Length: 172
Image 1 (cartoon, helix red, strand yellow):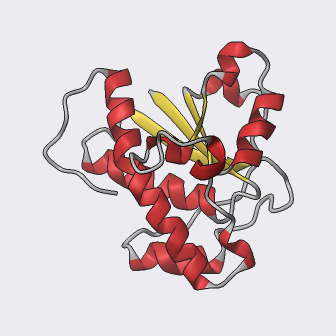
Image 2 (cartoon, rainbow, N blue to C red):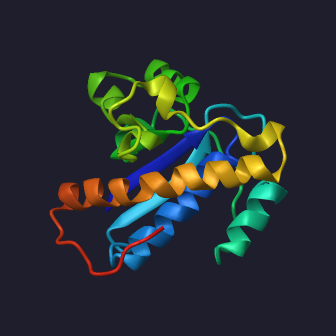
């Protein structure tokens, strides 16, 4: 099983949105049994909370039911249990890098949007997804667009890691 985690601050907005988008994409590609996706926050401030109501509404509109999500925090053991740790913004990448027990653990950290061809060649600061929590529903729409733009690249990358041929179905 190839294990991926998406990581943001509190694990109620960006990272669960990305988790659910990736799960759906891997299922559609026939890789759902080979790839596990979860999410976490670098802080414990939202520990146990469900998905933010604005994120929930967006996910439900997209046909994704976010029931059962309970915010959790990443811990150093994830560097041994996960193959790819996807940071939603620069502070998350930095926080995970400080938490990583060694170089191989740090090598598992990537910016989520580094898989989006429109920003893949830019630095980390241009690859971040700003926290929508502080704004209105339009911020969640922008976040969703950034997430879904990177999903196909993540699926393709994982497929190469699994050495699995491409399916005829695509999309987030």
